[in-house]
Image (cartoon, rainbow, N blue to C red; front, side, top):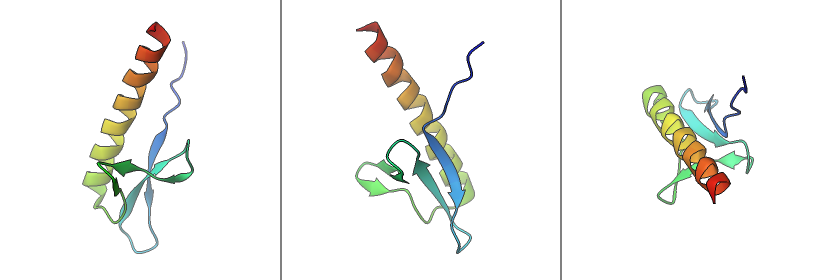
Length: 65
């Protein structure tokens, strides 16, 4: 069984807030042109899950083309 490698991860910032990190670009992730930094933990996890799911769907669609 293949283990899925996730592109996005949650990282705690030094100030105790959270960011969503884009491992492919090595930058904070963006959503609707907003950098996903300074988030509460719940927001970061929700957005990270959404971005990882969207990225997985995009990869599947590209492979099917």
